[in-house]
Image (cartoon, rainbow over all chains, first blue to last red; front, side, top):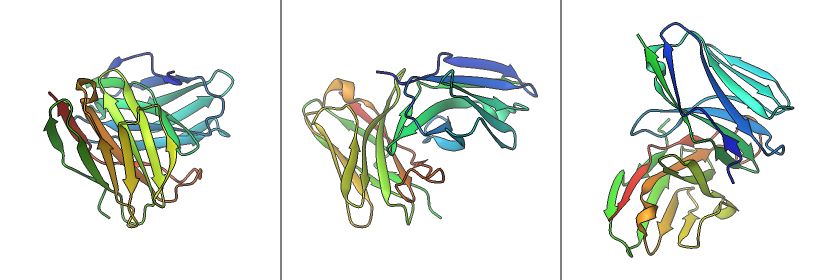
Amino acid sequence: DQQVKQNSPSLSVQEGRISILNCDYTNSMFDYFLWYKKYPAEGPTFLISISSIKDKNEDGRFTVFLNKSAKHLSLHIVPSQPGDSAVYFCAARRDYKLSFGAGTTVTVRA
Amino acid sequence: KAGVTQTPRYLIKTRGQQVTLSCSPISGHRSVSWYQQTPGQGLQFLFEYFSETQRNKGNFPGRFSGRQFSNSRSEMNVSTLELGDSALYLCASSPLGTSSSADTQYFGPGTRLTVL
């Protein structure tokens, strides 16, 4: 049962533009949401997170938005840079356990 | 501070064999979690250990087991390997093992297991 879904397997964006990654979840008991970035042959790297009691968290070029009523969160990257090309995983936490989406591959074009 | 380390990085086994993977968490981290990553499946949670006790378990068969030592290092074992066990196995550690918003999991580079 996939409780966290990333319906877009890939995203291509021009350098300098905004990247918007989306994630949907089904379990209303998740208390914390995270985004991870993964390069090939490396483990996922923590990017940004948001508590279920908030609706927005910003860290530099990265902003995460949470819409609890829609069970939806999104990650905005502004402006997109070539080094942002990677796989991005959305994750949701409950009881020390992270449930991950299948990932979205972002390609930033020069 | 050194990051999460996993050994070995690559492993090739044949069906029916067993394998043990090792994870050393970030110094001071007490919680260690294991995940399996396969193409198209994302990361699937295997189990989580805290203070040498398995605290949470995912939906994997009993062939997958683990343990944690007093220094927080953890091992994962897979017995009677199947072709479908071929995957990247990731270990993640967190400082407190609590539900605190600050208790983020940090991942190691993973062990790439290939079962022939």
